[in-house]
Length: 633
Image 1 (cartoon, rainbow, N blue to C red):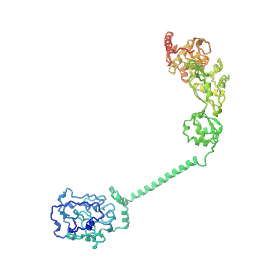
Image 2: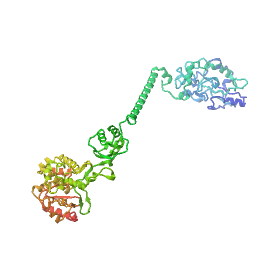
Image 3: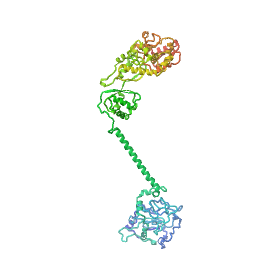
Image 4: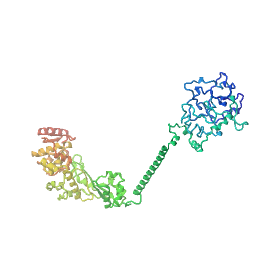
């Protein structure tokens, strides 16, 4: 049906009332057909909607799928979308003439504007977004199963009941109410209330109670709790809240999930709180192990042995008066990551200090004392370089420097002289000399050199508070153990030497060649000893002079000493340096060959080997040409 205003009504109130609809804001003005065609509805025929006769357009297939809210720009169904706005395949120009298709001064409305549920007003008791309460044909989210799905319309348009009980038929759309009279209107009701065919707002309002919902108050409250935003969100099939309420198993699962989640949160909270309490009680609580608070006392030296645990170290710290209890030390040790890299050795730590400070001092590299590194080829005594005048520290000097401990302002150190004197002690067992070397060492011509070679190259630790003899005995015995580990006794028998002679030969290899030539030099020594040929090594000349250079003079080579191999056949009286394990292994496993001679020809250490003296003279010319054999004396 179509409605228009009276042609003679041009008052300002009438025009304002025309737009006084709560749905204002969405009006669109339909196009006006200005062809002047006659209004077929003004023939004076009876209004079929008043008499209840059949809708003449019901049989028209174009109106079979009309959406009662499809074209309504004001009272549009918030859940619909105009899904059936036109007949499938229809054309707009095929519609019958509209009664408003002529010129007028009042706003025109399209077909079916006022069909369907009447426009609502706040004072008429309708919900904010349509019909708030569930009724025969409407539900919380849209329309009920009676012809409407949750998200749209069914395939056949309207449901079984349409608008039940209203007596008001439907031709496809609803419209706004531009004719509602203001409250102070003398006649009340609506303006322009009489229209062709006998239709009036008053008659319509008489039936408005038919649209009121009569469901329970509880359903109304439940419906009002659904917000407009929630109603606008598309729901999955069978995913509505109503469907969930109809499924008691799903509701039960949700409740059980909430209970399980709450229990899990409670358990987690108990674990966190309990763990925090235990940590507090262990590290900050009152039940703590005894511990010193200071002030620090005199420093002492403690030893960390290989494989010791924090508890065992703590026991020694207690014995030395560093900490009050091993438990306190252990608690501090497990919290200091530096303990993971702690090395065996001797450490200087103050007494009467907290366990945390004791552990911090223990892992500080500056606290370590008695640590010694002996390089390969080092001698017992200091030697001077002939060409530079620089002094190369001997083993006794290195020991003396590593022995210093106590207050830096008044350090306690073993002196070089004390060590030299202790090394000359005739009690070889007290010095830790191994049995396989004692006979030879007892017959050396110089007691000050009797321990030469018996302290091996490498890293060593000793107690700096010990006596000089005890310090030397520790170093000699541990070196002998490292020699024994190479199989020196068995290897000596295999090559025809004694273990002590193996040690002397290894010291010659260490001083005469670079590691890549060790095995060849070892073969030359064995080949010459086998034929009773003098070794003629310059290193043996320099050893007794306490001065060193690669070259020697004729006068130095002519001196007869227990070590000068230019003046005698065989090996020197003692080792001439501390050999490396590599040099000793080279003597135990010499490279096969017939070499008798070798000479270093440049300062890079290049060494040439020869079987004959003629070939050796040619190699020597190369050495002389490079200047490597020039003496600095």
